[in-house]
Image (tube, rainbow, N blue to C red; front, side, top):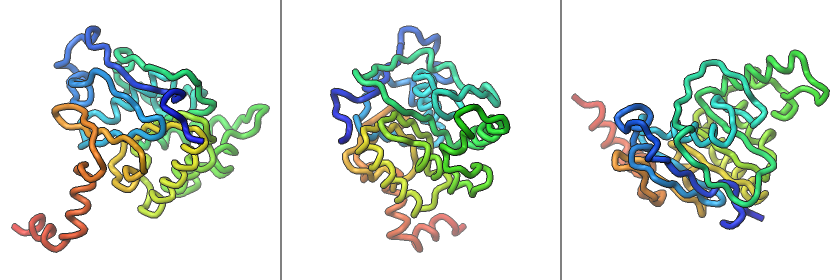
Amino acid sequence: MALRQMDMYLRQVELLREQVPSFAEYPFRLPAVRKMEGLAFHPKVTFIVGENGTGKSTLMEAIAVAWGFNPEGGTLNFSFSTKASHSELYRYIKLVRGINRPKDGFFFRAESYYNLASNIDDMDREPGPGGPIINSYGGVSLHEQSHGESFFSTFLHRFGGRGLYILDEPEAALSPTRQLAMLRRIDELVRDRSQFIIATHSPILMAYPDAWIFQLREEGLERVELEETEHFAVTKQFVNNRERMLRMLLED
C-alpha cells in the first residue's frame, strides 16, 4: 500500500530566506533557490526538472544533506568524502517531516556514483561481522559491471522499500529499456510505502502516473504536466520531425 499524504516521510522543504546572506552569491543566486520559499512533495513521487545550470543538483544535495545523507551519496551510514565540494545551502533550508520515519533511505547521485562504488570496495577489503557490504548491492563489485548495470543493481538490490529515496539524474547511464525497467522498480517500491524525490532529464521517468513535476526556469519553480515540460516537447518534436530538425540544426 502506497504512502498517504498524512503519513509521508518528507512533506516539504522551506528556504529560510531571512537567514540568506545574499541572493547575489552562489548558491542563492541559482533559479532553484532565488525564487523559492517552499516546495511541497508528493507522497509517492516528485520530479524536479529543468535545464543544466538551474540548480537542480544543488537543491537535491541540500535536501539530502539536511536529511542526514552523505553529500556524495549512499545510505545514512556512509561518511566518506572524496572532495568537500557541496554547497552551504543545506544550512539555510528547513525540512518539514511527516509523522512516520522511513526504515530505509538512499541518496543516489550519478555525478559521484564512482566514488560510492570505490568506497564500498575499500570497506569490503576488511569486512565487518555483518559480511561484505556489496552483498546488499547484488554481490558483484559495482566497478566490475557496466555503468548502467551497476546503477540498476543499486536500484534493484539495495533499495529495500519503506524508504525515502532522493535520486539525482538516475537515468544518466540507463538505456531507454532500462529506464522503463526503472519505472517498474519505482512503482514496486512506491507500493511498498516508499517516497521518491527525483531530479531527471528523462521524459520516460517523468511519465510515472500520479506524480508531481516541478519545472525550473529563471522565474523559479512551476508545477507542470509531463506534456508541458521542455524535455517532452523537444523529444516529441525531434521524433516526429527528425529530418526537418536535423536540417535546421546542421545546415549552414
